[in-house]
Length: 153
Image (tube, rainbow, N blue to C red; front, side):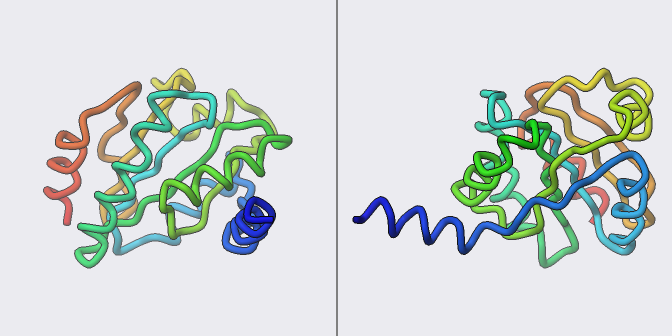
């Protein structure tokens, strides 16, 4: 009975993941103008991603008042959306989560950064004007991320 109640509570609190593709991604970034945006590309099967995301949530909580927004984008397959939502809830993500759903995966990756090969985890940092400032590929120390973000706030 307790498990049923826990699962019911998770399903009520976890918002559906919005779909994001090569066309909607730039529009989503533009909609955040005036804020420093940290986009986290992650997946439930990616061990470093699962380790990093809760730390990024804590970073956002510390710096949100200064204008930081964390946008998590899952690279999971659509059939694992429930697992991705569950992980976002457990990680403490309070903002809208996204599920990568490109029409063309290569075009999506090129739209993010032509030098990015799609490896995970990946972080993309945008300044308040929506200009891409930095991309990190692979595991990245949160202290390095925080230093870069702090310069933009």
